Length: 134
Image (tube, rainbow, N blue to C red; front, side, top):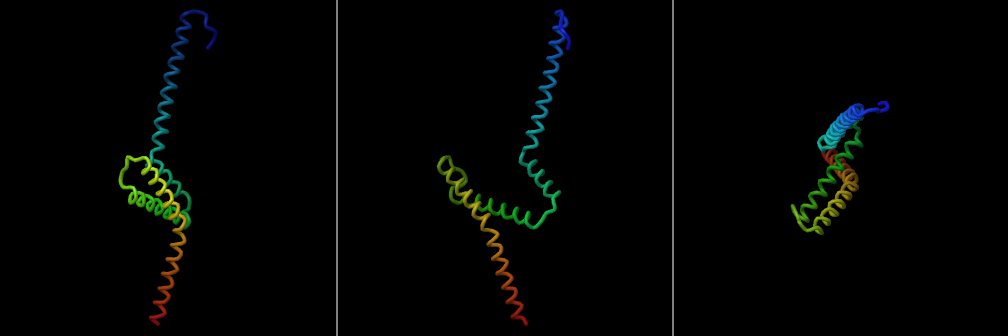
């Protein structure tokens, strides 16, 4: 854009800038739509699963995922048991969220120990069973 010397050049320059603004707004809207689409829960899960597939799935990753799921499920069920399905009371909802977080954290931390003890118990029982059959 050079120096504007008359009214016709000014109008042409204004029109050019208006078109440029319209194109930039359209590009921003398209970018926003694709960004919002990528942050939907289903897409986040897909991306997470794709990343897990790319990385060699080890026993640690699987056990952590299982422990996390079990912890979340236990917390959710505990909250539903103590608070109920829905509540309009802010204190009940807050207490429910606190209970859910505490139970989820406790189960997630204690589950490996429980699994280890269960595996040892099963191993001892199978060892005793073999010993008795001889």
